[in-house]
Length: 181
Ligand code: IMP
Image 1 (spheres, helix red, strand yellow):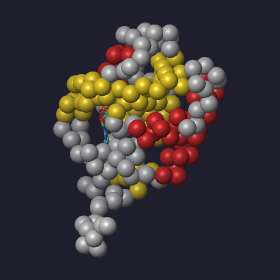
Image 2: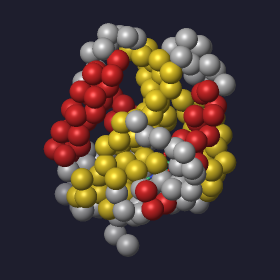
Image 3: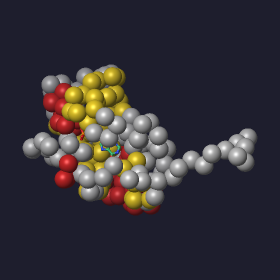
Image 4: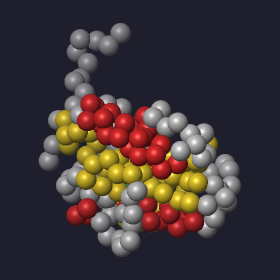
């Protein structure tokens, strides 16, 4: 039983509500269903931030799906990625001849997604597309990065919740929040 004196867990103010996320995911699901019909896809979730986005979006999809997980850690400080990415958990299945969609929580500098795309292209998928819940256009540092299925464009601010963390906290929030400055 939590005690009455338990410290209050800080809840960041809502930036994108759970309802807005739900509606956006429904729309993204429709787009993917329209594009792929009944063709099988391999859906790759990048760990850990994309887990909630991935599982909610998968529920909207009507084609056969192979699920794969790619563990990534990027070096850098707590709020900035350096673009040096390390694969901490690799895929189980080969990708050659597969229609692959990679699911990312957020594209900030774009360095992580660019790295992952190059990494996956080496495995010769039949097609390779990208889905991202959030995108910060002002922070982008790479050219020619296409996000095929995008949730929300946001300003260059640090956000948490719905899978996204700050120092491993806030991943379980059902909404996207902004941290206090
Ligand atoms: P990028 O390589 O700069 O595009 O950063 C990608 C990764 O950095 C994401 O997959 C997140 O894990 C993390 N990241 C970037 N911006 C944020 C943010 O605003 N909140 C939480 N994590 C972030």
